[in-house]
Length: 213
Image (cartoon, rainbow, N blue to C red; front, side, top):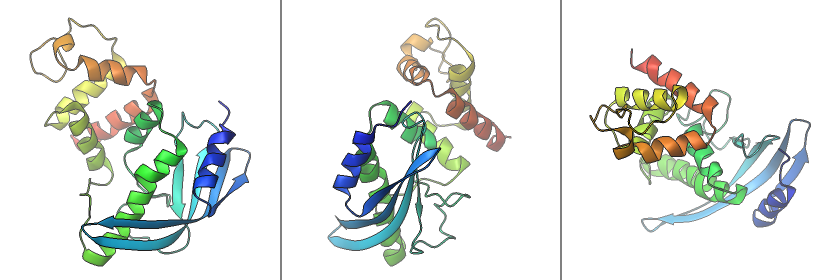
């Protein structure tokens, strides 16, 4: 799928400190982005030097971002092993792009709040918008909220159904409620199956199985 250059240009017009660098396998938006946000009467104004990588398969594959100016501590616990910023779970962001999230909206809803939260945390040692766990526990928390269940095994069973079974309304719901799927988790199961994000769901299922041992 070809990247929509109009969407890229709109992002550059909106965030004027960014410039486009074209590569063979991706496009990069590189430069400065400014935050100027308020939370609980606290205003934080700060500039960050960033590098956004937009894969050729975008939006089927999601953008990633690095802070390259040295303002974010490398030991900060919401940075991935490859140096990219952990804005949210890959699944959450992929589902939002599947609903029509644009590059500008991704920056406004994920990147800027992340940068603001980091600055606020460094100043006050507390996260302004709450905090989801990093890594595998964060993935569990995401699915727990998405499915509105309490346990890892419920998340695992629902994901296993999505990844490996065809939807049948008369099946017993894999959440173990005792209800049939059509009267329980039908909407979530059908919605996630329609995203065609099998690779991501199978990855998440594998990780949830690992932490449930």
